[in-house]
Image: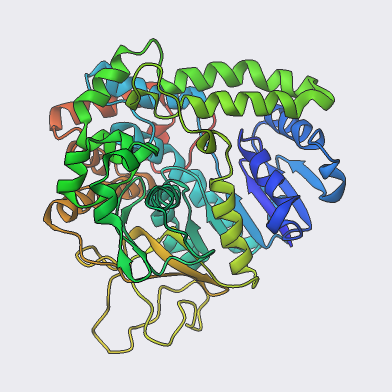
Length: 484
């Protein structure tokens, strides 16, 4: 099987390659093609892959290209992790709202809207080219903001696009370890999780048919043993009755996060940009030493993740620094889609449950929406209270037919209200990027609960238009992001 990685010069590509050449995913693919718009980044990453210990490069051929259409021909799986505007764009995503006294975060709040506005158009280009050159291929989307990007691609690819993120799955694994629960490999039957990408809650964690989550939330010592448990005060979690995804720190402890970010000497984007500006030329010239340099940089980058939420001298757990999260989710999904055995993962997919006894890809038209429910006029959502055609983040069973969402408990009032509010923002953002609708972009900024101001929305959009002049081409109707 041929795998194309769109964004093949990305920093985390070696994680995917490392997993493909060792362990349980070895043999899943026979060829890797790296596509990127930046030849220099491709050269650096291919040098890293070729220098991996054990001569892995000789066992799995790697080709790099800047020709997307040519790369797609004959491809069975496409893994997408692109960043239009690069790490310099991330700096602007964060700095524009910070100058207005708002939270400056890459995927949450104003920064996430900006990121989506310039990312959705090229991802739509990729999806359209897939329809032309490899219509049977699956798109595994890790491009952020993963939920919004996946929702934008559904009209083009239907069920053949799946959004992935390691945040929710990592939360489940860490909570299970803290509670002393051993989860069956590839099974989430006893796990309850509902949300959107970077906005979700673990609400049930079963062991032997008993929900152990309440006991975990009441155990201050156990909560202190893992990252999400340390983010929030124990009495707050016990009262909430849920374990929030780490990104909810930006909602529940908004002022603390905002002030911590403003007090930092540089934003997370500035730190990563500085690291990569120096690192990539060194990797390209490092020869057999490239992998070691990359691994040192990877660990340093992991240490800075969510630094604004940690106290002075507090470090991440060693298992969180070791890596191995998002690539395992991606490859587990790929293997199930390729017929390697069903698995269960928390993924971003459409909110509609498949009809009883019918797979999600059973309709004659391969790219059509989900087939009609078994009972005409009655459709069931995976998350009650959210639209059936919305992309949500829930446990799914992955089969060769796609990612089939598993039914979840209805969120309580406060959680459902926040989910609906942010989903409205996501849909306005998708409309703005896909249709070139500037007014929809303004409404998205104004409607986000971390902005909640039409005046600030106008200032945000003006700031992003100054930082990214190519947004003007989207409003002009070209529907494309032009690399500057």
